[in-house]
Structure formats: structure tokens, C-alpha cells
Amino acid sequence: MTTISVEHVRKSFGKVVAVDDLSFATPPGAITAFLGPNGAGKTTTLRMILGLVTPDTGRVTVGGRPYRALEQPLRQVGAVLEATAFHPGLTAEAHLRALAIAAGIDEARVGEVLDLTGLDGAGGRRVRGFSLGMRQRLALATALLGDPGLLILDEPANGLDPAGMRWLRGFLRAYAMDGHGVLVSTHVLAEVEQIADHVVIIAAGRLRWSGPMPEAASLEELYLEVAG
Ligand SMILES: Nc1ncnc2c1ncn2[C@@H]1O[C@H](COP(=O)(O)OP(=O)(O)OP(=O)(O)O)[C@@H](O)[C@H]1O
Figure 1 (cartoon, helix red, strand yellow):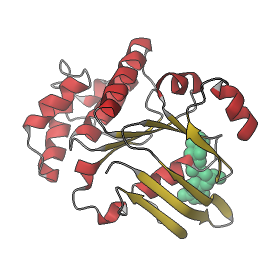
Figure 2 (cartoon, rainbow, N blue to C red):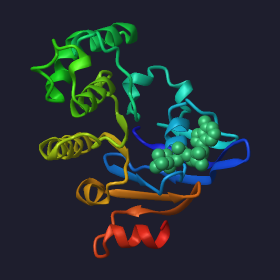
Figure 3 (spheres, rainbow, N blue to C red):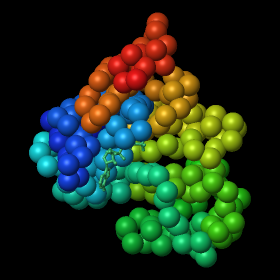
């Protein structure tokens, strides 16, 4: 099962209600775009899906279970959150190998994920010399280590050049076609229009729209109508 289910979730930080009675589910084998204005509650929701933040009320599950109850979380969910930190002195390969060993993943997978993310020529380089786009690719390579059924990406196109964006689109499309689920949080609507099958729009912590990618109307119009 590669679906995420968010059911009547609420989360506040002091007096700020970040997420308010939010419910949605992601279809399997599809790319779901998770959209909303700054401060809408997207990152908080992603963090709740990944068990990093505990909801005050409601339930968040991945493949039917809360993230913290998953037996092999890295094999079920791969995540790229904003500002992923890497040890600057390690090579990309050393970074991936350390994580693979810690998670009990076959080290042969390191070469595979470097290949998959187009970093095969850069595995021996120290991360300190990586561009933002290369760091994004390394973050994705890290998320793919466990060959997870589900990928969660926060602003994955940030820092990628046009060729990198095209590559990411193709990669995510192929990943979803294989039956995996993908949840992508982003502000780049033109990018979303090209890749997403399903759209979830939130504002002020609440669900504003959820459904298949609209075909006739533009996504920007829909977005501005429900969330703007
Ligand atoms: N740890 C925290 N402590 C206090 N307030 C928080 C915390 N995390 C989030 N918030 C608040 O919760 C609200 C939702 O924030 P969140 O980061 O989830 O929004 P977002 O949709 O990801 O925004 P952006 O698109 O700007 O990244 C904001 O008002 C934010 O200030």
C-alpha cells in the first residue's frame, strides 16, 4: 500500500492553528501535488505524515499505519524535506553508504541510487562542493535508498536547472507508473500542471480542494479561486 491518509487532523503551536480538521488521501500509483499559500500548513502536514510532529487530534497513516509504527520506514517512505543537511566533508557515496549500513540496506543500492539520480559521476566528490541542484539530487538519492513505495518531496524543483526539472518530471512519472505513490509540495503551479495526476489544496490549515488534476480550467485559476 502506497497511500497516505490524513483524517480530521488538527495541530496548533501555542495560539497558532497550523492545521485545522484536515482530511485527504493520496491515490496509489499517482503523483499528488500538495499546494497552498505560505503558512498554509503544508510542511506541518508533511512532518506529521513522517512522524516528526504529533497531531493534537486526528490520525495520519501511511499504508494504513502511523509512520512511527512502520517496521521498515525507509523501505516504505522516502522523504526529501526542505534544507536537508549533509555532512560537507563526506563524499556523496560515503554519505549514502553510511545511511545504507545504518538502515540494513545492501550497499550495492548506493551505486543504483547515484545512477538513478544522475549523480553517478559525482559519487566520489565531497558534498561541500555540490551545487544546490546536486544537493537536491543527493537528497532524492537518499530518499530512494530503501526503494520505498512512497516518496514525499518538499519543493523538489528548487535549485534544479531546466534540464534538471525535465529529468525530475520524467523520473517521478516513471516512478508513479511503477505503482509508487508520490506527494509533492510546491509553489510552482506550471510544474505541477505538467506532472501531477491529483491535487490537494489547503489554506489556513484547512482543505480547500482535492481531486484529479483539472483538465479544462487552468490550475492557477482554480488555485487562486479556492486558496488565493
Ligand atoms: N514549530 C513551530 N512553532 C510555531 N509555529 C509554527 C511551527 N511550525 C509551523 N508553525 C506555524 O504554523 C503555520 C503553518 O506553517 P507551515 O510551515 O506548515 O506552512 P507551509 O504551508 O509549509 O508554508 P510555506 O509555503 O511558507 O513553507 C504558520 O503560521 C507557521 O508559522
